Amino acid sequence: MNELILGGARSGKSLLAEKRAAASGLRVIYLATAEACDNEMARRIAHHRERRPSDWGCTEEKLELAARLRELAAPDACVLVDCLTLWLSNLLFAGRAAAQAEAGEAIDCPLLQGETTALIELLPTLPGHIILVSNEVGWGIVPMHPVSRIFADEQGRLNQRVAAVCDQVTLVAAGLPLKLKG
Image (cartoon, rainbow, N blue to C red; front, side):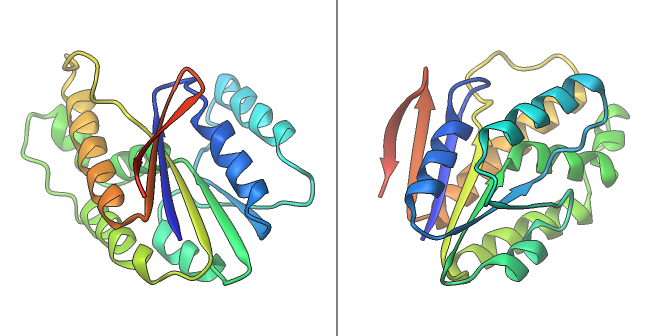
């Protein structure tokens, strides 16, 4: 089963994902996409680590999410990916998308297109339980900066594509889950 949990910043989406992973009865593997590039992000990562049970496996993947999921997914495993938002940001900056947006050019980023398509194509084929966490960023104002606008656009597109191939989709607001699909 594939599940997408969406929400805004500090909405409770990661906590819900962790509760569902724990309740799955399966071996849990936490797949982190964040990088501790500064002290604030290091504190966020530490907070998430402290909350997780010590018997959960943990691995990191910045860019090649589909390949890592292919390695980790198993009938007896629940893989919790936290989060697609940071993964997308990694892709935008690792490829040329962010620089192209900054320069006012059309976005042509094979890394971004290839990795997101690989994820969408792979998800329906994976065994076990996959839980993906992602931010809903489309309810605010249109960002002023070109890179922020392209990020919001790509995040919205990614969320739609992932939701389409997931069995269950939940939106979290103020810590309360709202079932959207499944």
